[in-house]
Image 1 (cartoon, rainbow, N blue to C red):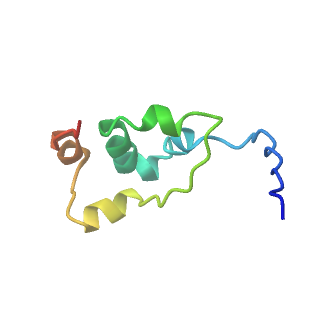
Image 2 (image 1 turned 90 degrees about the horizontal axis):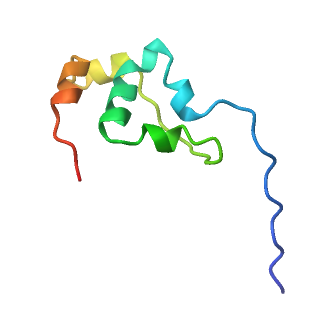
Length: 77
């Protein structure tokens, strides 16, 4: 059986993940994504991602009490 090419999906008008991280409930996640250098990638309108997005309270419960802690973590290179 020959492979059947898939049609390209229509360009989405949905906001990017980078834009969704502007929600105040995700400020810790946005700080972590920014610290990791991933915000430009998550803001690309042509890329699609599925992301488990813990809110700020989830970070606090996991032992990360502030954005300052995230910003003090070493950046992987």
